[in-house]
Amino acid sequence: MERVSFTGEPFSQELEQGVDPATRLPYGVSRYYSGLVADNGENPQSAANGTRRDPIAAQYVPTEAEHHVRPYEDADPIGDRRYMVVPRLVHHYHDRALLLVNDRCAVYCRHCFRRHFTGHGSGRITKPELEAVCRYLELTPQVREVLLSGGDPLMLPDRELFAVMDRLRLVRSDLLLRVCTRMPVVLPSRITDELVSGLAARGPAWMVIHANHPRELTDAFVAAAQRVLRCGIPVSNQTVLLRGVNDNADTLEALFSALVRIGVRPYYLFQGDLAAGTAHFRTTVDEGLEIMRILRSRLSGLALPIYALDLPDGGGKVPVESALLRREPDAYVFAGPDGREYRYPREKA
Ligand SMILES: *Cc1c(COP(=O)(O)O)cnc(C)c1O
Ligand code: SF4
Image (cartoon, rainbow, N blue to C red; front, side):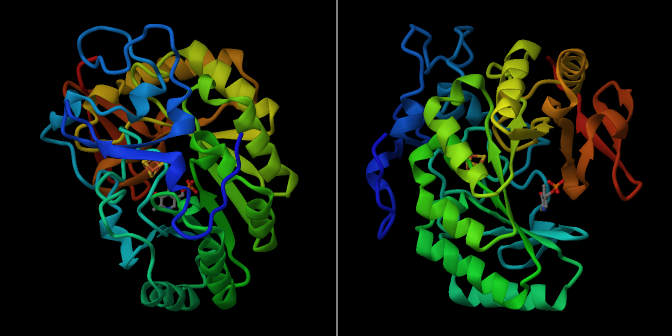
């Protein structure tokens, strides 16, 4: 694969962005990722008409279904805004905080739960914003870990990303930095030796990636993941359970067993969030539980992620299996970490 240099306006020739004429929705994809769409007659555009969709195309091609917003869907489904302690820093959990480094992604996932933030013009973190974040971290030693997220932090050119990390290190040399990125999956050429050695030099760091389907695990992906691992940065993966993409045990068994073979730990399998216009992607919680039951009988503990749900109304992340209290006719009722009850809709399968 061709390497591009990431100075100046980064990797624009690698990316395609536009407005889909059929749905009038904006989209963005890397040429690499759209190249993974199978050329076997499955129609990437067909949404709700019963035709099977390609699992790669389904993740980036807009569909009419996104215009259908359910009353309980939300622009901020996991309550980021409530926990934003200073602009761009979400401090929700005791010892870790999430930094929205920029709002850009190489691929704009149709199922993204941060759709209110990604690609909406807030751009890169500014110097004054970063200073305010650093002041907060200086005064809040209970934060041991900062998640570099967004958007995708690796959409920044190396020197800008490294400058952010260096600034954080200056106030808190003890921080663990978690780089949350989809780049190894959607633009593996971004994972250069210069990038990974620069990340490792600014460690301790972990990388958390986002793969949803075994077809994403190409040779280029494997090489990118191994480049990261060889530098001493552990890699974990988060998968979103997506109807029509990976909502069956066979697909997820193939995905998780392949990941663990290359040294990438399956970390979370997420139940779909209540992001606006994503109902067509959600499975029921009972479908997820049944898939997990099968996976547990087939997969090594190393390959088995936690099936988790980010509770609505900022309730926080919980493991579905232990937090589910009961089923009501229209809702699954969960125990939140705060002891309160949270309701997640029971949608028609
Ligand atoms: C998910 C999340 C984290 C990290 O949670 P882990 O369970 O450690 O992966 C941190 N902050 C916010 C705001 C999150 O949404
Ligand atoms: S890469 Fe992550 S932040 Fe970006 S659109 Fe996809 S899910 Fe959202």
